[in-house]
Length: 73
Image (tube, rainbow, N blue to C red; front, side, top):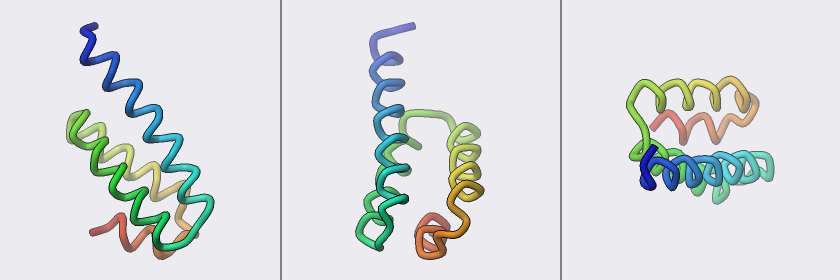
């Protein structure tokens, strides 16, 4: 595993934790920031992994309708 891989994994773990915090806190500004982090994560992994992650978010946070709308864009 290269240093880039380790750094990318660390960033993704931090981003994932922050996304969870933001969505749980609620509110459109938090949802918008969470979506930006989701997009950043997409640049750090393959399309299939990203699609699976987005699907997981949709399942976990399906009650957060405004987040679902932003995530679908």
